[in-house]
Image (cartoon, rainbow, N blue to C red; front, side, top):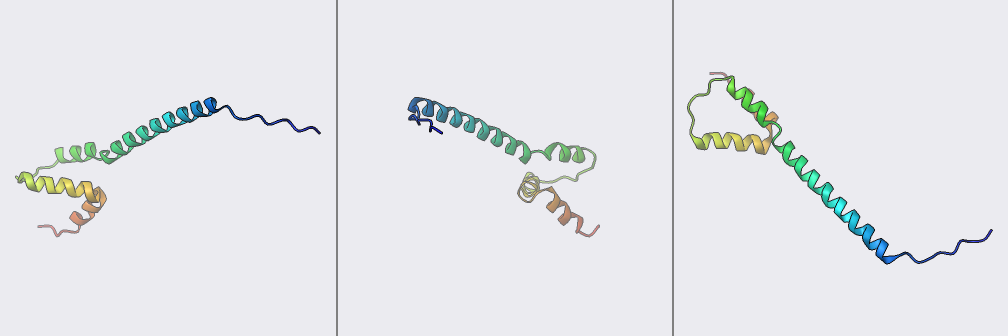
Length: 89
């Protein structure tokens, strides 16, 4: 059986394919960035809807910021567990 001769790859075709793949990778990276950003803020509508249904005593802006930052840092589940462990007054 005769071997088929190997011909050298076309450098221009390789470079064009490489550029196309890099452009596709950049697009995928952007999609991942947008998805991560959306996931980071996915709980906002649920929290705001819950806050609309309860009465909240006056608080300082700094207190509200601490609460929001803690939810952002630890997540809603961890904050809810800690708050749920507080004794009722």
